[in-house]
Amino acid sequence: MAIISMPVTWSASSLTPPNPRRLKRFCYSTMASASVNKANPCLGVKVTEGLGNLPKIVLTSSHGSEAELYLFGACVTSWKVGEKDLLFVRPDAAFDGKKPISGGIPHCFPQFGPGQIQQHGFARNMNWSFVSAENTQGNPVITVELNDAPYSRSMWDFSFQALYKVTLSEKALSTELRVTNTDQKPFSFTTALHSYFRGSIESASVRGLKGCKTLNKHPDPRNPLAGQEEREFVTFPGFVDCIYLGTPNELQLDNGLGDTVIIKNTNWSDTVLWNPHLTMEACYKDFVCVENAKIGEVELEPNQSWTAVQHLSLP
Image (cartoon, rainbow, N blue to C red):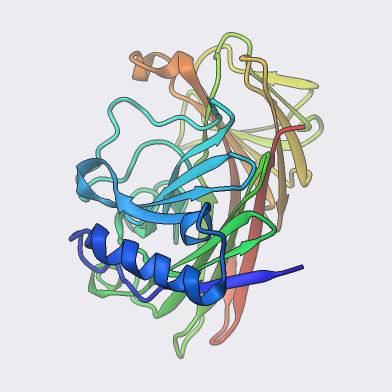
């Protein structure tokens, strides 16, 4: 199995986008040295300007599937198989480099939900660096990186490295998050992928949660109600904000639009279902959130790492 790697040294430490002409020359020179077919520029990886002039990485597989990731927040905003985009970005999403991008697959790190620091942490509010790209049998793979900076240390005073690897194949999108403690003292964190899936709220359902312990945050998010899921197919009849603990490593989302998204995970121990219903009247009918999460704290000693994988696919 041939793997061709393309190191990328450009960093998104500022919001100034790269020079497209310079990137184009770099990509083609890399292709020439690696004897890559020029019909698939940059190993199926292209850096370009996205909305709000924010740097965006576009992945295109040899099978025609496509994905997009913004370096601001390392947010995957699109995953297309054929003409269908399986992810959803809210119409009120800001692409100004100031607010998190609302939609796609945002990060929640080092805190999920409210707590001692800002809501869902700072990883979705920071610029990640483009580290590398490669191609495995027509499947583009990229890795981006986040390190501590004055902004993160102002609320969470630890040194860390987060590597996020995204792999696109014909009918699948895989992400791997690896967090390493690069500090001299231990730290703990919670985290999640706040995934928005395109769907019809009236007919969407999730299968695989029956028997799981639940913490229902509706109607009082400060006092979740403990329980157990009894339904084979969990639906979204109204406002939904529920944590499922100890979930299996495979769930199935029927998006109500004719697609079944298989959601597999490794080391994401919990799941969160969310839909804002009438509190977001402009778009709540068009998406559901099925979020892989780590609700219990991950504790890392210096030089230790924690890794979790999410694998989304169509049958």
